[in-house]
Amino acid sequence: MMNKLDNFTKGIIKENPVLVLILGTCPTLATSTSVSSAIGMGAAATVVLLCSNIVISALRKVIPDKVRIPCYIVLIAGFVTMVQMLVKAFAPALDESLGIYLPLIVVNCIILGRAEMFANKNKVVDSAIDALGMGAGFTLALCAMAAIREVFGSGTFMGYPIPVLESNNISIMTMAPGGFFVFGLLIAIVNKFATNKPKKRDFGCEGCPSRAVCKGSSCESKEGA
Amino acid sequence: MTKLIIILLSAVFINNYVLSRFLGICPFLGVSKKLDSATGMSLAVIFVMMMATAVTWPIQMFLLNPNNLGYLQTIVFILVIAALVQLVEIVLKRYIPALHSSLGVYLPLITTNCAVLGVTILNIDEGYTFAEAMVNSLGSGLGFFLAMVMFSGVRSKIEGADIPKSFKGLPITLIAASITSLSFLGFGGVIENLFAK
Image (cartoon, chains in turn purple, yellow):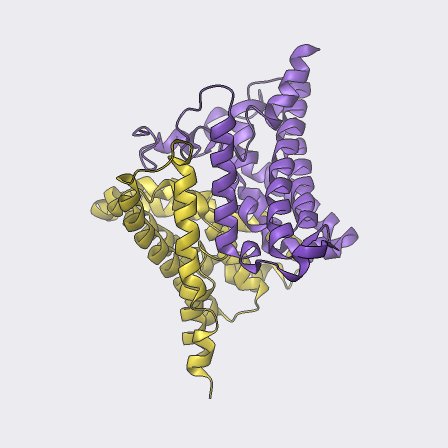
């Protein structure tokens, strides 16, 4: 039981996909302009991650090793299309605010990364728990970033105005530079307060689905220091 | 013609894929450490973006839309791009080995690059004609190239700088990216007004 709980919480803190593993940077930066779209993105990605982890884990003995990446991509694209249609039908406002980033969940490194790192080696239940933990970690990191950007950038929180900040908003925080800036600051804070000695954080190669091909040769991750 | 130029310039400067649309951040942060790998990667991206658009646009317009299969867009596009990248790699290896040895490493990485899938989907969403879609892909690729090359220059300066310990590595890179993207905000509105009658 303890083991299962650990499996869940590691996604939130110790192996947070966004702030520690540095995966899925594109949607993190793009959809964290407001808390409500961050929650929507987090939920959509979590649903896809949960479904894909369960199915990939269930099929892990069936899918031949050589063609596993294309198989994973097809499975994930199928689930993304389902989520896309559901969102379009039941939450058109969310569809509007996520725009192109909704179909782009297909190429979100978190989902392929978890398939490659966890689901194809573990049992269905463990994979589902892992997916929930990672999804929660992704959503929380996204919300933290969105909260900072929305509060300072537009002076609102979940759409409700905040007295002083509303008239003194720093609108650059909701634009592209603010996204990079807040993300950089958050990772620096995580580095500062990480309990275990922080290893030098660089781009997250271990989660990259293409690692098998490039072996870090194109990101020069081995140089590290 | 003017419209094509506007599309090209705004794809390069205003709606820069990396710095204002946040697509393709992974290679932007991962491969921008050295100038030559940054150049190689972005050339491969330009190439694949154009190829992908040339293939996916007709598929959407002549195959999916007439048959009411528009919802299959995501699955079809990602499969087409993945197959295309493999094909390009095989062809290059066989016929132009010199180009393959310089771009080859980056090709597999591009399959899962959201900028390529992003540009093909955006071309459809914006309702571009085939020529406009191709120009938009070229501009997007060039914008990616510009951002990568500029940023690899910025990064080589950061390497030697004395920065707080917890900012070392990725955080300072992101802060630098933020300032680089700030400089691109200056282009907003310029291009449209340049051609306004």
